[in-house]
Length: 179
Image (tube, rainbow, N blue to C red):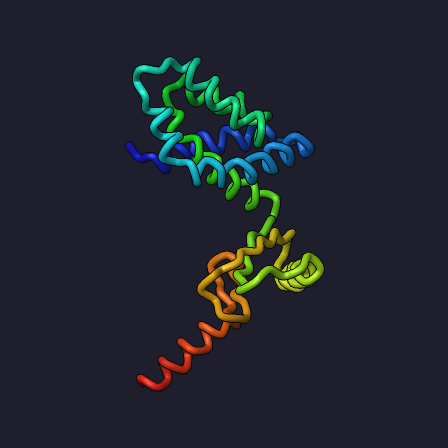
């Protein structure tokens, strides 16, 4: 069976459940933003838990509830539903797809700046505003410290990349020398 298709159906159902409920939709979105990295960084342990045939759906739900109470209490009914249907292993993927659908519906543009060392909030906010002026909609800008960068930055917006890093410049120089 196509896991992406199944997960996308659950993501669409979650999106429909918050349709017309702006505040709830934003809360679910914010919780999913917080929860997805936790689920993905612990994917092996969560998969082991969800695929355990010895544990009942109730026990699995109790174990997940501890994580959800901390990061996403409003999403616990959704997770419980997936567990009851035997589809718990679609949880992380369906939430990631929900985030994509929600962003597309609300005109939210996801951007990421990779930097060699942390940049202060004011600079990140100025950059977010600059990017937002070039795109329709709201821009969510995440800052990621990348150890491989010597200096400068890389800005990713969707499938576009603006590379103003020292590493990028060195790679461009090397490519010119080879040509």
